[in-house]
Every structure is written in structure tokens, then in C-alpha cells.
Picture 1 (cartoon, rainbow, N blue to C red):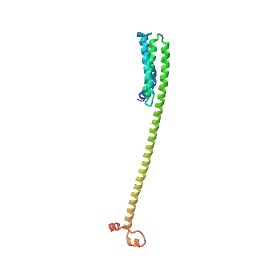
Picture 2: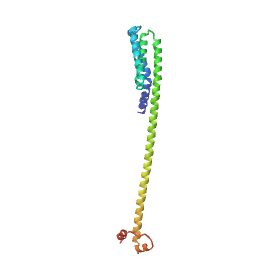
Picture 3: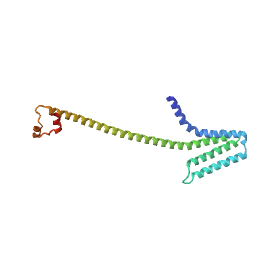
Length: 202
């Protein structure tokens, strides 16, 4: 069971790391298939891919400027522009050397951009875990204090009950002694027993 969880965790962690290489490799493979099906030295296809790549780059530039610029949209547009440029060159070229060189360059750039996002995500995850740990520690501290306070109150109540029982037993025993006279205790300066207690015993 633990092996399956570990394997699943390893695959889940490795999948995002392989995404840039898979994306650029997929573009290269599809472009070479396109090359084999008539795109080689096709000026029209090359012009189309160039126009699409430039359009995506312009869209990325427009999305990244100004206060309302969206980094996600800009990054997506620039990635699309690079993929279209790679596909255009790989589809137009007759050899494999230039497409492979562009593939390596595109993969390196993709990993460079992704690494920054991974560092940011990791930093946010560590900060979140630290915050949760502090909150858990704070709650545990409050719970310990409340448990100690409740225990002290219970102990005080138990001691009070035991003292009341002992006092009641002492009063009962004193009132049961032969020759007990509450008025003599009062004359001697001792506290007088309540009339209710004396009445109960007599």
C-alpha cells in the first residue's frame, strides 16, 4: 500500500517536470510529420506559420503591458509563438539538424521559464505549511492551557467537597459528645454552631 502511494506521489511530482520537454517534442514530431506530407520548402506554409507566430508574439506583448497586464495570458501567447516558429522551421527545413537545434533551444527556454514558476509555487507552499504549523502550535498551546485550568478547577472543587465533608463530620461528632453545650462554647469565645445543626442533633 505504501509502495503504491510512494509511486503515485513520485509520478505526480515528475509529471509537471516533464511537461516542457513533452510539449516541445510533440511540436517537433508533428512538424516533421507535416514536413513529410508536403510542407518541405513550401513558401506558403512557411509564410502562414511566420504570420501566426508573429501574431501570437504581438498578442503576448499587448497582454504584458500596462497595469492590467496578465502574466499568464502573456506567457501562453509567447509560448504559442515559439511553438509556431519551431513548427514552421521544422516543417520547412529538409534536414533535421536545424529543427533539433531549435527544439533544444525551445526546451531550454521552456524549462527556464517553468523553473521560476516552480520556485514561486514551492516558496508559497513552504510559507503555507509554516503558517499552518504555527496555527496548529498556537491551538495546541491554548488547548493545553485550558486543560490545565479545567484540571485545577476540578481539583479545587474536589478539595472543597472533601473539606466540606470533613467539616460536617467534625461538627456532627462534636455535637454528639456527652455534655456538649453550645452556650459554653460561645462564652469561651468559640464560634457558635448554627441553630439548625444543634436542632438536628437534639
